[in-house]
Length: 198
Image (cartoon, rainbow, N blue to C red; front, side, top):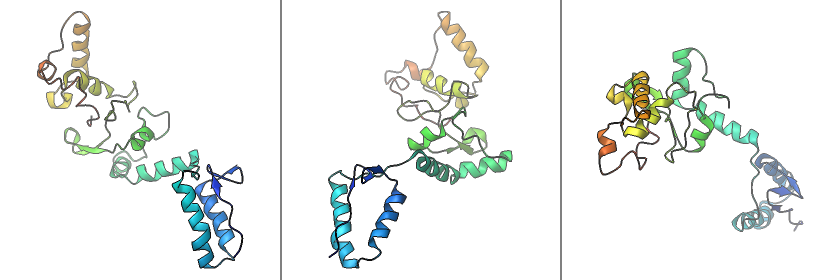
């Protein structure tokens, strides 16, 4: 039987970092002149053992991660709806006022919003409370409203101007009145409204 192939240790091939594609290509080259029995009993067994013991890892490059992100977000109905509505693709750059990469990585997905003709909208934050909208996003105030009152401003018919007026009064010693914030269950304090679509 031919010599065993070199094992992958810590995501490397003989000390050099490799991507999954490179790993597969090198495996294919080594398997070219070997019988299925040799491959099945030797190479694949070694690789499986290495993976199970944590010795082998796949090196995911930033380029790989970006390709996965682009493929996933472009496959969403939100993306096609946006292009059809505005005649151009959404700004997915890192300088955008919404962190789409963090959203996708965190498992967030756009949902239909009854307050905007049932079109797709992304959540303002992750369930953990981590914000996805930047401070410059035009509707970031809605997430702050929800965290303070436990209610959706669209359900209440509250505008940004009205919210700012309320905040201004609160800074002068006023109180933000809300049935949710005054209830004993503390819905806003416990973050049950975080991550809702705004």
